[in-house]
Length: 279
Figure (cartoon, rainbow, N blue to C red):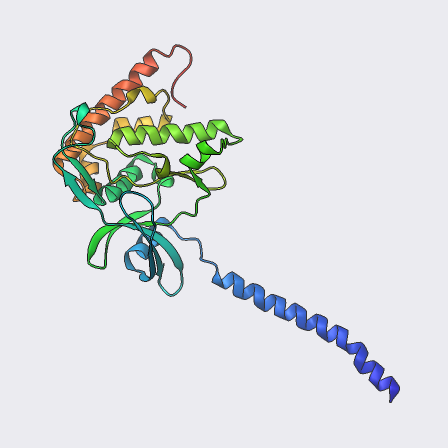
C-alpha cells in the first residue's frame, strides 16, 4: 500500500509539468491570436473606411480638435485619428507675405497623403482617407504609436545615433512642406517612433492658392529620387489622385511652387561644385 501511494505521488510532478506545458502553449496561442496581423496599405485603407467605431475620445491637443477613435472589423482592432476641421478666414495669418484667404480643412490631409503617394513619400505619413463620423465629413488616419514629437526631442536634447538617416528624413519633410505650402509644420506635427523613423502628420493648413515658396533657404539638400519625382510630376496624375480634395486653383498653385522648388534645387546643384546637394 505504501509503495502504491509513493508511486502515485511520484507521478504528480510529471503530471504538473505536462499540465504547465499545455497551459503555456494554449496561452501563447491566445496571445498570438490577439495580435493584429500585418496589413498592406490597401487593407489599412479598407479598414479605415469600413471598420466600426467602438470607442472615441478627444485627443486634447492641437488646434484642429482631433479625435482618437478605436476601430474594429471583428478581426483587427486599431486606433485612428479623425479630423473634421473646415474653417476659412478672409485674412490670412501670414498676410505679411501677401498670402490669400486662410483655410484650415481636413480635406487637405487626404490630398497631402495622396500627393505623398505619387512622390514616394507615403512611408513617412500614416494612411489617410476621407470618412464621415457622427455626421461630420473628415479625414481619418491610421494611428501611429510614436515615442516622442519634435518638441520633446528638442526640449530633452535627444539626438539619434544615425544622424545622416535622421537628416535625410528631415530634408524630405522640408521639401514636401514647401511643395504643399504647409503653414503649420509645428513641433507637434513631426513625430518619431522608437527607431527614429520620422512621421509627418496634419496638413490641414496647406495648399494655399499661392505660388510662392515660404522658406526656400531651409532647402539645402534633397533626396535624389524625390527630386526626380518632382521633375516628372504631371498635372494629369495630380488631378486624378487629389480631386475633389483640391480645387483646380489649388493645383495651379501647387505646380507654380513645384517649378520654383525645382529651380531652387537646380541652382543648388549648379553652385555646389564637387559636393552635390542630392543624396
